Image (cartoon, rainbow, N blue to C red):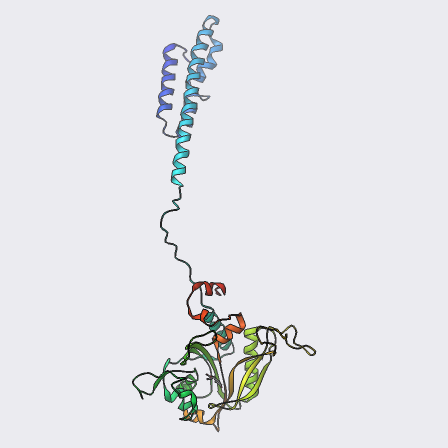
Length: 359
Ligand code: DAH
C-alpha cells in the first residue's frame, strides 16, 4: 500500500512540476503526464489508496492529494498551451515561402515546329526504306548548277538570286537548293539509290511574310532500273498521306527544271477541303489553305535528266530515276496555318510552344 504522507506527496508533486517545466516539447510533456498523473503514477496510486485509510485521515489525505493533482493538471495545461504555441510558430516559420527571393526558373524551350516537321518528313522516308543524305551549305557552283544541267546563262545563277562566296570567281556559293546532294550521293554511292536530302538553302531574298533568305527544303531521289513516273506518283501519294492524313491525290502539271525531263509541278489535293471533295463536291471557295482551287502547290518533280545521271557517273542506259523537291517552311505554313514566315525565324519561344513539342 502506498504511503500517503505529506513528504511523499510533496516530493511527487514537486517532481511532477519540475518535469513539466523541463519538458522541451509537447511530445515530452505527454510522457510527463503519463508518468506523473497517469494510472501508474505515485499520485494516482495514492489517490486510490485513500479509500483504505482510517476514516479520520481520509479528508486530510484527499485534500492533500486533490490539491496537489489540481496544481499539476493546471501546470500541465499551461505548459501544453505554451509548447503547442511555440511549435506552431516554429512550423509556420519553417514553412514560410519568401515570394520576393530571386528565382532560378529558366523558361522551358520547345522544339521548333520546323524541326518537328522535318523529323516527321525524315520518318516517312526512313519508313519506306530510303536513307537520309546530307551535304554542305557552302557548295560549289558546279554541283549546285552545272552538274544539275543548268546552262551557263540560267537566270537562277544571277546575283539577284544566288549568294556567292567571296572572292569573286571562287566558284563557291550558298546552295540555292538541296538538289546538289543528289549529285554528291550518286557520285559517292552509285546506283541503285534511294535518298531524302533535307537541309538549309539560301537565296538573295528580302525577308517578308512569304520569303526568307534562308529556308529549308527536302529532296527525294530514287535511282534504279525501270523506274517510271508511276513510281514517282505513288511515292508522292504516300508522302502526302503521311503529312496530311486521309487519301490525298497528287496532281502533276507540266513544268520545266533543267535537271528533270519530263518535269512537273506537283500539287496535293487540299487536305482542308477534304470533307467537301468528292464526286459531286468542289473545294470550299473560301478555303484558307488552297484559296478555293482544291489543290495545294507543293514543289517540283520529274524524271532525272540523263545529263544529270551522266554528270554523276550513272549510266542512263542502265538506270533511270525520279526526283522531287519541296520547301519545308511553305509546307508548315499550309499544314499548320502559320501566316507569316517571319514568325519562324524570329526565335520567340512562345511561337514554338504554341505548336507543342512532339516527342
Ligand atoms: N530544286 C528545285 C527548287 O529549288 C526543286 C526541285 C524541283 C527539286 C524538281 C527536284 C525536282 O528534285 O525534281 O526549286
